[in-house]
Amino acid sequence: MNGKNVSLNMNVRGLKPSATLAINERSNKLLSEGRRIFKLGLGQSPFPVPDSVVNTLRNHAHEKDYLPVKGLHELREAVADFHRRKDHINASAEGVLIGPGSKELMFLLQLVYYGEILLPTPCWVSYGPQAKIIGRNVQLIHTTFEESWRITAESLRRYLEKENDTYRPRLLILNYPGNPDGDTYSMEELQELAEAAREYEIILLSDEIYGQLNHRGGHFSIARFYPEGTIISSGLSKWCGAGGWRLGTFTFPKTLSWLLDAMAAVASETFTSVSAPIQYAAVKAFRGGPDIESYLSHARRILRLIGLRCASILQDANIRVHDPRGAFYLFIDFEPLREALERRDIHGSRDLCERLLTETGVAILPGADFERPIDELSARLAYVNFDGAQALAASREIPIDHELPDSFLDIHAASTIEAMQRIAGWAAEQ
Ligand code: PMP
Image (tube, rainbow, N blue to C red; front, side, top):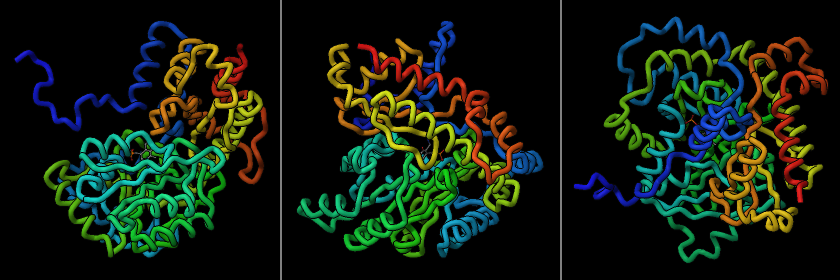
């Protein structure tokens, strides 16, 4: 044996570590070499976990027993109640599955579901690689800047009608507010998409992990319009700032309990159950309360201010980007600057991000990682390199029905704004 990958599973051969984790390691390496780096690559919440949730975790540190595979009953109740309260859908505890992050649950879903996966692009970095690892057939449906990088009922129908097997089993993954685009769907758009999905008997995986980070607090779930065919994905990672706690949730309608049961069977042979203390703390998070609602209102107001300012600096530099409406991302497109960039030997998103990092210190991810064509000049940035704890404390000093003043940005998001100015200045170079 020469120690090489003689019998590595063909689906895994050539697979690299997840793009977001790789950029983080690359940025850390440059930092350790003394470079000034603006870390806008990894999409991690800048805000601390709410105090009441941290305290609950502390009080349950002694919990040591394995918990039921599908999750702690109290937590499944709290998650179902969260969706009833927030999304006005008829969720029940029996339909909830708890996993070590929604990412793992998505992997299990793709494993147990035997159909085609439809991915509107740009889409989150891991859906495609997960499908490839399992050996599933993935169909990409590219969207455009003009469509706000969102799939419409019309484009979904157009795609299906040109397929010769219109009613093949299909799972469509929707994500809103979206990573990488920071945008979301209106209620009407969701209603139309729901009608198309029902007509073609498509199962929806509705990734609503950023739902509570809709910048105006106006998140709607498509499950309201297509309850029988929608699985809602959520978790603690984004709105509760607890990515490292690893807790995700899937909420199924009764009609899809066969998928839930199959996933739980696989979970019982793999991860067994999520860490017990984390599940107890999650009960507190999903039950919510005035402190958590206030935390969310401040987080949304801060993200709205920073996101809109970032977009405006880039728009002024002739970079195409929509004003964000949720989460903490912008999907930016340098297409109007293509000629000038090609003269600088930049022909696609990988060149673009590599050069931007080495020439300005700003770390962002290439559009190609989000399943976009390799020669597109697109990229995703995460405007999260600010001190969330400090920003929250300062925001709490200002009544929540006021907009934050511009000076807030100078004090609390100076380095995020500087990164935008660096991108804008770099884009203007000839
Ligand atoms: N979906 C989207 C769109 C995400 O951005 C992320 C995290 N980056 C996840 C799912 C997975 O989150 P987790 O596994 O932490 O629940």
